[in-house]
Amino acid sequence: MTNVMDVFTEDNLQYQFYPVSSGSVQFKVRATNDAHIALTMGPQETEPMYEVMIGGWGNAKSVIRRNKTKPDKVEIETPNILNGGEFRGFWVRWDSGIISAGREGEAIPFISWSDPEPFPIQYVGVCTGWGATGTWKIEDGAEFDTPDKLEYKFGPVAAGALDFEYRGPHNCHVCLTTAPAEVDPMYEFIIGGWENTQSVIRYCRQKPDKVTVPTPGIMNANEFRKLLIEWRCGRLLVRDKVSGAVIMEWVDPSPFPVTHFGVRTGYGARGNWKIAHFSKSGALPLPPSAPVAAPLYSSPPGYPGGPAPAGGAGSWINVSGGQVPPGAVVGGQDCSGEPLYVIRAQHEGATLPGKLVPSHGCAYVPWGGLEHGKPEYQVLVGGPNNWTPTSGSNIPPGAFPGGQSEDGEPLFIGRVRHEGSMTTGKVQPSHGVCYISFAGQELGFPEYEILMS
Image (cartoon, rainbow, N blue to C red; front, top):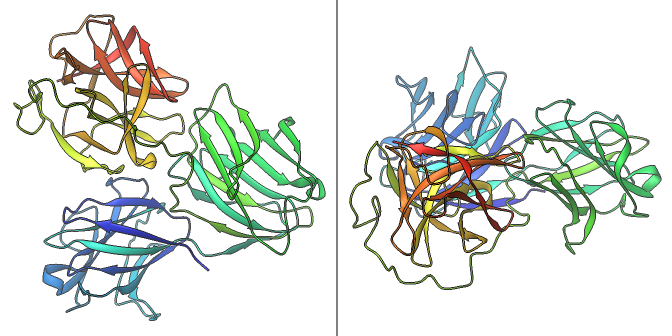
C-alpha cells in the first residue's frame, strides 16, 4: 500500500523536489509532452544531476542527460508516449549507477544508461515545459519491514517533520542525524520501549534520557499507529497524528541541522513501516487573516510597474506555495539545516524583505512585532550574494535595495545568526536594526550583515 501525492507543474521547466530513500520512484503523469524527472543529491538543480526527459521534442523522443549538458547520454524514439488527456504510468530506477525508466506494468525499461561515476540520489524533481503543463500522481514509499536487529535504515528529510506509521508490538525507534549513519550529534526517539510501557528522547545515545514518559500500550502488533515527529529551532515534538496530542517534547539548547532519519526495531520486536517521504504535514503556518491594505506608494524597484533594481544584477520573480525558481539567492539556513532564500512580499502597504522556507510552502516577513506567513511572494533570482557586517543605521554604499516601508522608507536586505539559524530579514535604517521573523515573532538586531550589490 502506498500514499500518492498530487502535483501540478507549470509550463516553466522549474523542478519541484521531494526526498526519496529507495532506489526508485513510481508515478502517473498527464501531459502533452516533456515530462522531466531529475535525480539529485539535494532539493535543487545542482551538479551532479541526472535528468530523464520523457516525451520531449513534441512527444517524439526521450533522453537521459547528466548535469544538464549535451550530448545526451542516450536518446530513443518514443512517439506519443505521453497524452494530455489521460494519465500514463511510469517508473524511474537507479541502482549501482544504472539509470533506467519504464512504463507501468513493464519490467523492461524503454531507456537505460550506466554512469561510470555514480553519486547517491536523495531527491527526485519533476517539471514540465516547452508548451506543456503536467498533472502528476507520485507514489510515496511502499511499506517496509525492520527486523529484530537494532540496525537503523536511513533516508533523507526535506523539512522539519517526519510523518510515519508503525505497526509492531513495541520498540519503535527513530533517529535524526546529520548523515545516513549513526553519528553524533543524534536525536533518538524510543516509542513503546521497555515492553511497550514507556517512551524516551535520547541525545547522542547517552543516558540519562532527556525525557521519559509512561506510554503503556502505545504500540500494537496488529494495527498501524500514526505518528509525527517535528523539530524546529531545537524544539522536538512527538505527536499522535490522529489526535494531535503531544506525546513527548524536549528543547535542545544547541540544535544541529538534521538531514536524515533512521528507523529500526529490536528487543524482540519486528516492525512494519509506512514513511510519508513526500509529506508536508506538520505545524504549517496559516496565512494572515487580516486583509492586505491598498498600496500607499509607487511600486518599488523590481516590482511590476516599478523601475529596475538599483545597483547590481538580479531580478524579483513572482512565486507562490514554497516554490524556488532556478538561480534563487540563498540567504542562510534554518536551524534544521534547510536553505533559506531571499524574498520580499507585500504586507499592510509595505514591501518587506524576508525569508522563504520551501518546506513550509510559504515565505515569512517581519512586521508589527509578529512573523507573517505569505503564500505569494517574490524571490531574488540571479542577484548578488555578498554580505557585509554592519550595525545600527550604518548602511554601506552599494547596499542592495529590498523594498519600502508603508511610509515609503527604503528597506534593505539583512541577515543575522539566531538560535542555530542564519535568517534573512529587513533592515530599516530609521530604526537602526535588522528585523527577522522567527518562531512567530519579529525580532530586531543592531548587529547584522547586509546584502551588497
